[in-house]
Length: 243
Image (cartoon, rainbow, N blue to C red; front, side, top):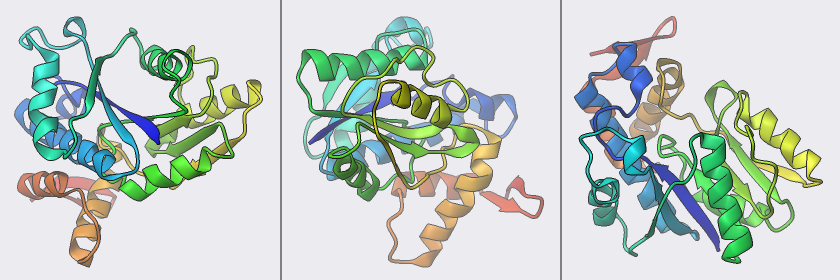
């Protein structure tokens, strides 16, 4: 089994800051969207063949109003999973450091065979991608899922790499170079859009709406409900609009 670490923030003011700064969403709307995505992503990992690890931000890296980050994250995750997940605080001041510390600790100190790191904004990551990555890790030490803007929504490892600045833009290229430098084979799972910026939503919103309208297709239910309630859609341009 792959241990899948979801990098979680407490769903409070300050999440999805670019959407708020661009006046796409209010602080409250951004919080609602993030909470829905976090719940859907954790439910997806729980339903997959992986072991869910919720890797949450420490108190000194979140809004001052959040006294207990673990409790805030638990209030979202615990009700949607069947098996109680493991909760661990993130260590590191940058994304690269946090991922590197988590992966290295699990592989080298706990003897975990494979580790995946999943962004909570990748609501469209179905369980099949997580399970497919686990299969690919049998023959490749690094498996990546690319996202919008050259980013990655999922990065899985059967061995370590040099993680310093490993997520420098474009992260998908940087991670492949680091894997090559370490002598590791690399494989990929299909791309998934994240939802942290206006540009991300230009891809994610039509896919969410299309999956819902197709009927019989898996959709992240809470995320789709919030997108519908916010009236988000894309018109010619492409332009993100509110109904």
